[in-house]
Amino acid sequence: MTERDSDNSIRQRAIEAYDGAREGVAGAGKRATEGIDEAPLVALAAGLAAGALLAALLPRTQGETRLLRPTADKLTGTARAAAEAAREAGTSRLAELGLTREKGAETLRSIFEGAGDAAKISANAALSAARTRE
Image (cartoon, rainbow, N blue to C red; front, side, top):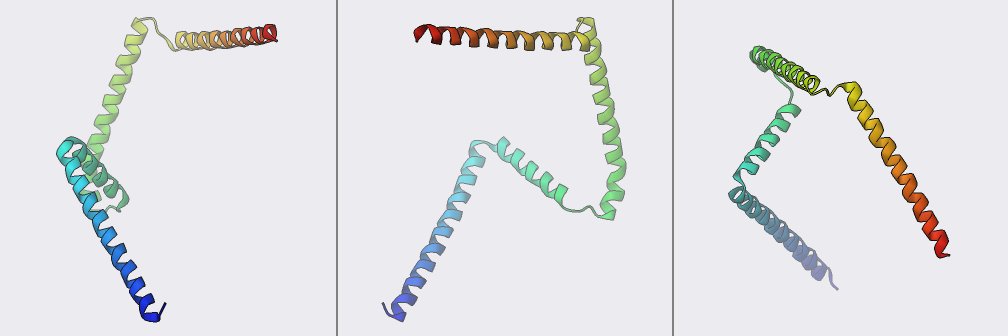
């Protein structure tokens, strides 16, 4: 193989690699467009998530901090109040039904003990069956 043949071979491989990459990008674009057409709400959610990720990664400017602080404080306060109201309402309803933390712990303990006992009994039955077949 001559130097010229080698150069042509390298050139040909580079052209093929470029064409393959171009086709891959075009295919990805086509698939993305089809995905948006088929599920626009999913595409919207993905776009919002990507935007939120970028916003979280980029540092805030002093101007943004100054302008957004009152709104952020209000949202934080509202979210805390809503979470507290939900917790209190849930706790109250569970108490009305007689479902307390202690009762829940007792129920879970009983379930785990029962599962442990069932596993022991099953293992003993399997062992006994294996021994009688020998």
